[in-house]
Length: 445
Image (tube, rainbow, N blue to C red; front, side):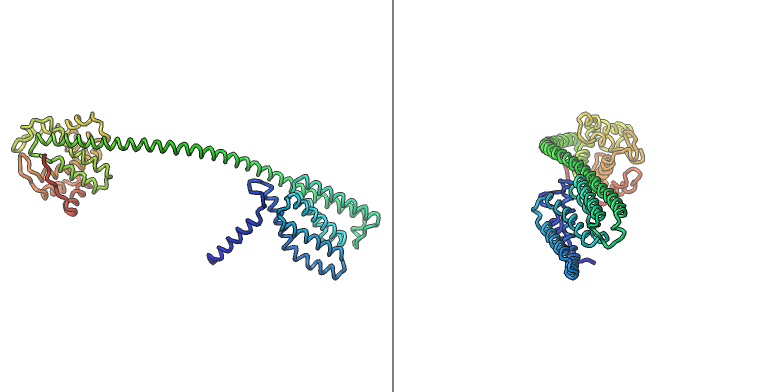
């Protein structure tokens, strides 16, 4: 497993090589020229490092065989490559042209001194290929022309007897001609293919550069649009903040109005003084226990605080009558939920307070009033209010009976859990009283 320290060293070495091999004055955005300079650096690097393994044995052999011209030529060429490698301030075209000429000279020296079966033809073959890679198609064609002239001249020297090698197959002019034609054909195919590919790559990189410029322009426009949007967002946030403050003031006003309505109702019914506010306390506590948000909990509190507003339409004598109500009187009492709905509906509260007030006497099995709704037809807020209203009514004194006590009230909702009352609401209410110590606070007008 590679240690983090080794990874750090590898990263540092890689970054150093990237900086060292990056051409001065060029970036990736310069397209093919950037990569041509990188290629030249790689070739020179290989010439300096790998060339050392060739240069020193070659010089030793030249000294042994007394091939002084080859040894001197190798030394000059190797020094030349070292200079080109380290002097990167020299313009790229000069360095590339010099390296291309070196490959030609090296090929000629090796061909004339060692013969056609040495490394000379390899370097002559590479001469136009390197020219095409570094300087393009035109330079590759020039290099091919130089190779063609060189081969023709050497053929003339062979035919005239001024150039002889120790190879009978090469010294025959007609055989040299056949070999030369094959050499030039293959050399032309490879060199021109490489140069054409390089030109196509250059075209592709230029297109990508053009696309990049276009993308940068689009990016700049997007940044400008983004700044404009940010300004608009700030203005919108200020407007939203102003609206929020206005809504808060409106909520305060609405809460005050609701509380005033609640007090007005209870003034007319002294036996139920504080009933609505106690129901509101329990309803909001149940909502909180069920995981309602703070805003929803406050809304349920206000719903409960005016849930009996419809009683304002009933005669006072009817509200404070001692004793049990008759069947007819109960039927006259039931429309108070519908009346509360009619009173609250036109006001336009931002939450369905009128609907909650309308449904707070509905029951899960459909036996409630005024519309006989059942199950999910009853809004959750009304189901909470229905349980809280039942518990508070049984735990408090009524005109027609004394208080039954909280234990009786809890027993009542538990007995009718899932029948008249929502099971989750009943469970939350029982938990408040039995585990969390909830108690009704004394309320009065």
